[in-house]
Structure formats: C-alpha cells, structure tokens
Image (cartoon, rainbow over all chains, first blue to last red; front, side):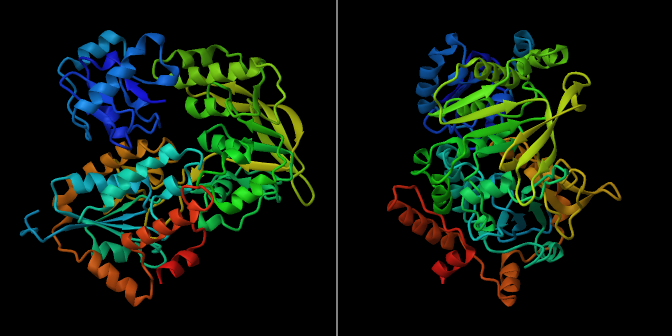
Length: 101
Length: 459
C-alpha cells in the first residue's frame, strides 16, 4: 500500500520529507507535494519528517483522506520529481501554527 | 578553492562503507557544484551494506533503493573499491595523504551485550548474527542456530527484533521465493519453533517498532500475536507521551498491542508473545540455554524520559534460543576518535571531533549509524548524509589548499600490497551470476556467501 501526501501540505510545502526519501518519489507543483505510488517503497521515513503530519500510510489514514490516493497518483505522474529540500512556501509558518503543530 | 585552478583538479573524497549512508553522501557530493571525485571503499566485494545484508528477504520493496545507488555508481566521478578494509589494508592516515576528506559511513554492526550471567551459553545469540546468517553475509555464513528448539526469546522491541521474530515465525514456504540464503532456508525448513517471546524492559508506549513492522507481525498466516491486556494499560506519564502530536507511532503501536491482547485464541501453529516491563537477569543451562530469568520492572521518571527499574520480582521462562537486539555499537578504527560509551564517533554536524581537545579533526567526517547511533530507517540516512556533506562543502576552502592524488595513488598502494580490489564492473559480474543462480529455484538471486567464491568468479 502506498504513502500519500494530504491536505496539510497545502500552503506549507516544507519539503523535509524529500531529504528523507530513499528513492526520489516526491513530485511538486507550486502548492504542494505528491508521492508517486509506483516509486515509493513504503518505508515510512517521510512520515515523521513532515512538520505538519501531512503524510500517511494508506493502511492507517483517516477515512476522509481517501481521495488523496488518486490525486497523488495522477499529479505525481504529471509533475517533475523533487530531489532536494526547498524553501517552504511563504505561508508555511502561519499555516503550521494554524494546524496546531 | 583558489588552488584548484583548471577543470581537471578534483576534490578527492573517500567514503568508507557502501551502505545507504555512504551512497547518500556520494549522491550529495556528486550533486554539489564542486568538482568532486568520490572513491567508495567497501570491505566486502559487494556493495549496498545493510540493504543487501540487513533488510529482510521478505521485504523486497525496501531493497529497491538499490536502483538509486546503482544510478549513483554510474556517475563518471564515482569509483568503487571493494574488498578493501580500512585499518588493515590501508590506514586512515594513508587515506588522508591521498584525499581532501574522508567520510566514515561504516555503520554500527556490533550488538550490545546484556551483561548478564549465561549470556555466552550456546543458544544465546545476537540478532546481528541471525540477520547476517539468513541474508548470506560472509561473516556469518558458518553460524548455526538450533531450530529444533520450541521456545525462543527475543530481547528488544525494535525493528531488528521484529525482523528476527518474523523470519522465525513465518512458514518457510513464504520465504522460499525471496533472496534468503539457501543455507538458511534449509535450516528454517526444519524449524520446530512454536513460541516466540518478544520482551522489552519498558512498556508498549515506549516500544521502538515502527507501526508497519509491528502490524506485519500480527498478520502472518498461521501465527497468533498475543499480549497481556493488563500490561497494555497506560499510566499518566505514558498518556502524556501518547498525546504528543509528534509521537503518533506510539499510539498506533499501542492500538496494535491492544488488538493482540484482545484477540481470541486460534489454532495457530506458532505464537508470538509481546511482553513488557521485563529485563533479562540470567540465562540458565549447563551446556546450552535452558531458561531465562526475567525481572519485572516499573517505570520511573517523567514522560519521554521514563526508565525501567527492577521491582525485585522475577520469573523464569524455559527457552532454548535467545536473541538479543538491544542496540548496536560501531567498531573503533585506528586513527579515528571513538566514543566508547555510546559506540559512535563523536561529531559536530558530521565533522569528526577529537574529544580530548573538543575540536573538529580537519578532513574527517562521519555519517549514518557510526555518526548518530543505530536509529532510523534507510531514508533517515539520506537526511543525515546531506547534513554531513553540507559541512564538507562549507569546509572545502580550508581543505583544498594542497592538491591530493586521490584514487590513482590509492590503487597503486593497494596493488603494491597485493590486494585484489573489486570494481563496480566486477560487482556487475557477481550480481549477474547471483541472479542467474537464483533463477533455478525461483528466487530473485542466490547470493554468494563466501568472499573466496566471489573472488574466484572474478579471476
């Protein structure tokens, strides 16, 4: 079962997960990250790396995150891979505080 | 960097060890805007460290990180020198004369001792030996494990303990088409193991399993995972730990342990019993392990720094096999500072620090388990190596004042000493042969488990 990036990444895009990924499975647009489920090896190293807990193993995601499975698959295939940590979005810290992390 | 005029002047960097941390360091160096030449030195003829010899054979997906490492080896500024032991075939100071910087990424493969009576009785093993044995690591090729025994005790609540438990618990048919070593498959086919105790000195909330690994132990066909309901009750300080937003893994683990505690008995062939709040105090037996005495613990201290203290109450559990997986230590290398207590090399952001003077040693760096201790998973090493390489890049101005000869000089020295080095092309030969050998039995590969066999193939 794959891992997915979910809504908390929006307005944050901290990209700490990218540094922890052993196989380069993260893709990015201007707003957030997506995991390519065909490249992800399900190691879970990215989960604790995310400052806003946006990443889930599909096995234990809350039910309302389910639509993100398809979104990650589709968007990842269409976007370039990200291999290095980048600057978070300017809205990141505000969003993080709002999310309670 | 003023001395490095001209395109051909490389910054020569040696990486000792070819596991994940070594490869991610190579990747970060080769991606930097510096003109770097990397020489990776490995004591075995085969690369990839614990991805080859640590990751369990029934976790093939995790081994796909090898695809990334393989891509790194194809960089024109990357070189692999296998079958070379630093500290024996070449010294650290010799490497220093040839390279601008050395990164030690040689891991921490020695198990910690329990320090109890009977620990060295036959039948008492380290998890490392068992893992190395089933993964075909040449160092552990000739170890033997008495799988005629019915009860095994695994000491430790981390992912290595989970691997050992899973390999002991699974039916051999589930392993047959993995890259498990043939000798291990044959031995496991005869296994009579019925019960596996997995014991930890603290509680379910402090267990270090990643939830994924723990869940897997509850899903093995024909195997029942059990726990004691009472031991899964949490007290106030544990509840504080569970409530911390950064500690979601603990909550997931507890939910799993509770489900194991509540599960109805089944007709399972084998069972796994998770036991908490117990420490081993003695192994008994005359010629062989026959029982283990456990001391019951209580937790003391506040959330996230709770430690186990003995209550004085003990129980003795009959068992014929003991595996300890209670932490790992690095091996000191001559010429490199070493923290004997922690079993790691002291460092500051990856810069090796000489403890006596409290200053970084110019040109020496560490990454991976030898740097931070045996924690995290494969990907954790990528972030760790990125940090070390950032330190190196920042230091380069001071390191590159003197030109260094790099790989050519190292090759010449090793040739003079009669060392048969193994190149990446040699590894491709070994790799292809292993894959071919595996085809007969429907395995992804049949590993060579002796260095001599590998070198013979290459001769």
